[in-house]
Length: 393
Image (cartoon, rainbow, N blue to C red; front, top):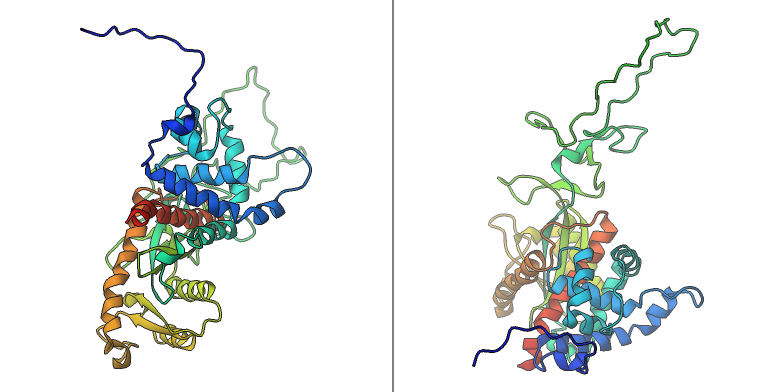
């Protein structure tokens, strides 16, 4: 018998929103770990907010909503609020009831940017890694480090010469020409015959996206800066590749299961990777006297970097250059060196996930602090995405 295609409206629903989420859905384990990690940060949240005044969006809900945006590749905060309005799973994960109103996108964005600084993003990542079920999955002796380029939210046309005495971009390519220094006082201005009607002025504003020919023009970070994102730097990854305005993201990974234990983002330059690697290893194990190992590619094969690692009781399992390598036989003769060289390549997986799923191939944020906070939080979300399979094993 054919069923009738009739829509029957119902005013009330008696099914709990918790019952609508499948029992084996991966978000259940992620939500449990996140809630317990955020509960450990309750004292941190308490110090950020004034005891009196109008209540803000709860920080726990801000963080859970931001995690959803990364995990499900939601392009913008406006689309996130739209999905939270009708997606019951999103409401359940964030902690909203079925009748609760969602937030205005601009209010959510301002509250989120104020809360999720780089320091708070690191604390959230640390709380997740310190969870009682996550901590046994981590190695505390063997690590790998690497960096990747994060394309800035700025075009090459915004990379313009620096001018003294005025901020970059005072006269951008889309701005009208500046006023001339001619004396236009009434005493010196030539007499003009009065016209019966004022003629319509011809438009002097140039096209906002005008064609620009950069051929033959020498541009560098010393003489040019982006008027869109002044913190972005012109950098190219290797010989034969084009330069682009970008940042450089860094990650410190433990070698057992490939979790990112530290993340950082800096301006792009040739020494940023080695500086960030030292900062992350010291931040993760401050004052450690245990012998750690750190795997890295040939870009880290520098005499001063290797010496700094040895001074910090870290064995440099760095890939050797063909010539003038700072890594000698006292390191390469051990079987652990070859094992570290195999495991260190796994660090490309969090970078690939962050760019394809987390939206970090080209950031939509501007400014070093905001991009760094987003990159660190994306690495924390990448760790969460791998948790359900590892906890079920």
